[in-house]
Length: 356
Image 1 (cartoon, rainbow, N blue to C red):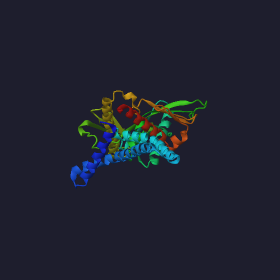
Image 2 (image 1 turned 180 degrees about the vertical axis):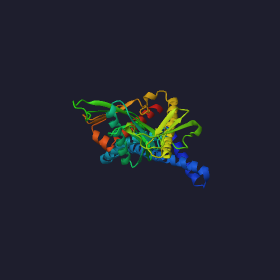
Image 3 (image 1 turned 90 degrees about the vertical axis):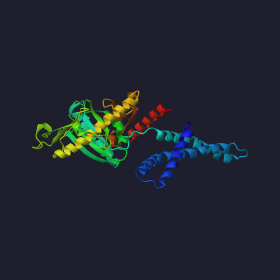
Image 4 (image 1 turned 30 degrees about the vertical axis):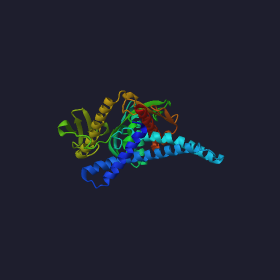
């Protein structure tokens, strides 16, 4: 089937769904048709724009061949042809991107987990810095940022921290942040002025709901114990800390931030569900992809993806060779959009290459 035939088929389906919805169908049939219609709506809008530009280009070219045109009219027609010849390929690409298979998790909220890596206390301080960067980015996007757990070092660093980020299409924006982030700077404690390199690992998981994945009680082992703070001192005298093990996968989540065992269990289950869901998605992706290492943002947590170099004031993303000399804006103000949009565009380009 040709590209134009495929577009015509989509427009016919959209029109058929519109007619079907206007006949007064109810119940499950209405819900299904309504969702299909809603999913097609943005694609149809882009197709209509592309068809309009393509038709206008053909008409302008035909008009330019008519005899007896004065120079002003000819110049005006050639300007219009030039404009449409630039616009049409852009709209064609937008249509093809809209038709790419969608990641079912893209529309979901996300859970972000950050862990200090190599570099001791400096790595823990960097992990806290990254956590605050994503919190600021969430604020810029008007997303809700809920801290789930923080294991701090007592002097401002985080051994690990996690948060739930709720909003529209959160996972689609943040999924490329998974991997090893590296910082190069002179620590405040370094008297000789030597630059240290430290690392932290970021994992972004789609926040799974109960409808996404069913976790049976029989598959869980839940242990409770007394919570303790930095240095081992007891935070409270009750067994409020919770450790949940998902027996089929061996995934473990431990939480002790809340004084209530019930709250710790609820948060731990939320993280566990998302980790199990992500493990299932990764398994399916590996089965589908012939070469996962070629995929940008594969979620490989051992992949070094970005370096934050303070002496040079730069942030470099190694997957797309993009360097921005605006480290303060990125780290302190959460201005990540240039990286995120470039990563999304690169991912779309790779997928287009695969399907064409």
